[in-house]
Length: 157
Image (cartoon, rainbow, N blue to C red):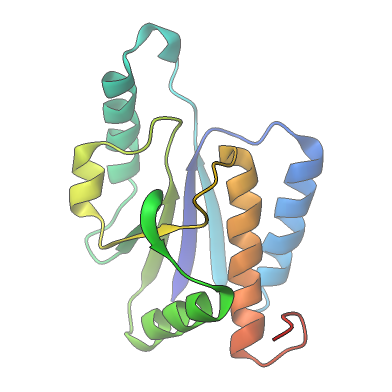
């Protein structure tokens, strides 16, 4: 199985990017992982919220294969603790899917078409985080999940 994290817009904070790179490297010891960035929509200031969500949604859906399990990182999604998330990962690995595709949407969330295509929604918190920080938090949680599955000492119970 491969895990892909799809996100809108590049990370422009160098320190954040260094941490993202560090956890991405660590994650590579456990599973094939890919962070894929969809470039920001050009002239988004001239678009309504609905138009921006639609354009971003089209770009997201172009990256989704029919065999992918699409999981949206959404504030209204199901919340899991780290152990629950590790079990969630294990369940998908056991199911024999090719790719587990997690998506961080743009500033206004997802288009209706993306919601309809998704198999699940997960929330990292009820708090609001910047989209760039969510990348780091999520990749760290993926890493933590795999260390839990391997009974390694990274996560303290």
